[in-house]
Image (cartoon, rainbow over all chains, first blue to last red; front, side, top):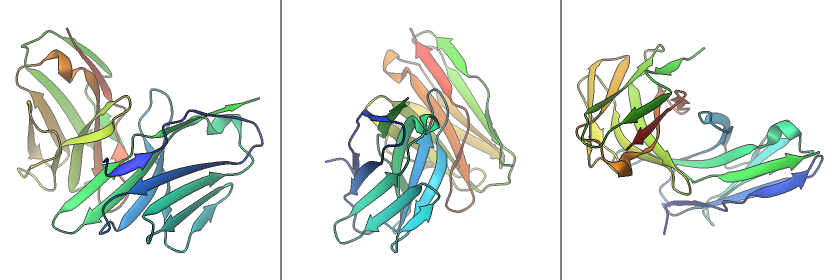
Length: 111
Length: 110
């Protein structure tokens, strides 16, 4: 079993749609959680951190469920420019620093 | 604005060649990383370094070595390139939580 698992997609949605991505992680000692965005042929960039209480940044909402070891990202009112791959990232700092990237979920937003 | 640069965007090498990939960051970050990214597998950590002359193996260090002689520079070395090392190589640095990535080097080994 992979340490961080994501649905690879692709998700094909029309502009204006709401889309949700899910991610599960296997290490219950994980401490920090992030969503990164990676455009085609570009490097990953931090989209947002994920906090236990849930957090929102404009059209993007991230949630964490520690009991189920589950992270989600919700994108409302999708734009063409949201088309990208979204990477779920989990970090631990017990017995050594370790960051694990999920394989990513591909999103295509169409006009 | 953090900047992480990599020496080449595209590289083609022959099997058995020694390959050097260079990474430089300008933010005085302690921690630097080398990943490779392959379709369906995501980013996999090859090596990381948390200080000058310090290095730690990641998840897939076999066939690779690294060098960190200066804080801003972290080099990845393929001692004898093989075709299964054809991949996208990404360097990253961090001071705390967010990792900043370089633009990547697409290496093809023929």
